[in-house]
Image 1: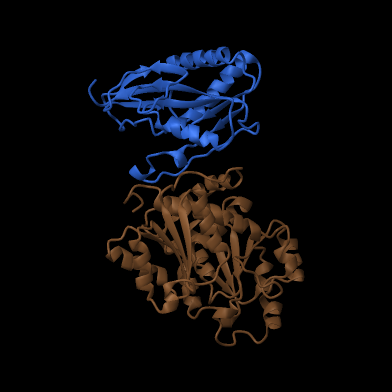
Image 2: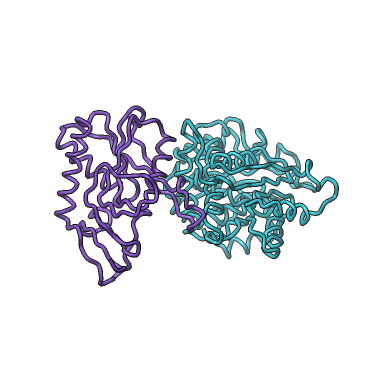
Length: 192
Length: 322
């Protein structure tokens, strides 16, 4: 789970579904089209998911882009744990896998993919991490949910759903293939 | 990792070892990058306090700290105030009082790292201690890097057979590996001449479930998945542990014919040695440089494993690793 995602405790009754499996499929399809349109094709594109659900989303987007463009798009994962600015505030967490496609990132357009955009600190860390792997021509950001509350001047280029939330609320993304249950985005806890 | 310090493999459970090895695998990636630097430990200070000579362990910890952006400083026994007669307690408490985050310590006395950790904890110091080898007691990061190296070559160690061969009486590497390998599911056979087997080894083996042997050829015929050759620690030997070096080599050295016989039996077999090697004594040059030798892989893994250990001890908030 990406650190910007706040988990909902098991069995919390207040959870409300804001995106169904169908909504998520449509949102990803739209984002895939947006990526192709904005980049005038898929040439030199690399999709990098931020572990863990961002990686699953990056793979799905790559398949959708490939369907549109008829060419395979390199996909990888970029762990940001070692680059976070809040390491000293939290218990140590184990780093996840970073896999940069063999094509590398130099001179390419990298689309970072994450499930939830919140404070923006994960994305800042991802930009630092990415700089250690090479110099992309451009970096874009695609997220399934933008829940607001940015603490840094960061915005997403491609958003599945803008979801105004309060700090006390929790947004939970579940993805088939990752969580072993049907795709959904739910919101719970707090008062809006 | 739940311990505040890393003094012994006994500080870790199977999950702790797994976590350190998995993190090391991600840290290994930094070694392959053009720019070998991540900001993870920026602002942290690590002192390598080495009262015994060392090339690989000390530089490995130093590189590990530097690659994670920690400030690392080396102090050797000879160049420190201990050569003026300062006590270990005063030396370490002085260093801790400077606000360092970790002391990586090697000392010729077994238990020295534990003692220093106790002094620091009693004084309320936040400084953490990593045991980089204490006398004939333990060398936990060496055992972790051995396990990491073996896993990378053999896959899971579950059900694998590792033979540890040589001067086990004086070996802290042996003691740490004897704790770590079973946590990963490997079974261990320890081979040594009777004079270099610790007293009480038989009862120890029965209690902890490892096998003891004095016959290297017999063990090699069983086709162990890995051979861990230990250095004959001449500097720790006050008495005559074997009649002549030649006799030791004949009985317990990984000689060229022995290597050939082993690889015939176990073509996938691998050879480890913690270094520094006494070529021609416990290991023949042919064995040290063979394709099945993982000696340099161990050195490379050492940096990744030490990055992992420093990360888990130092990166989290105060108290988080505790």
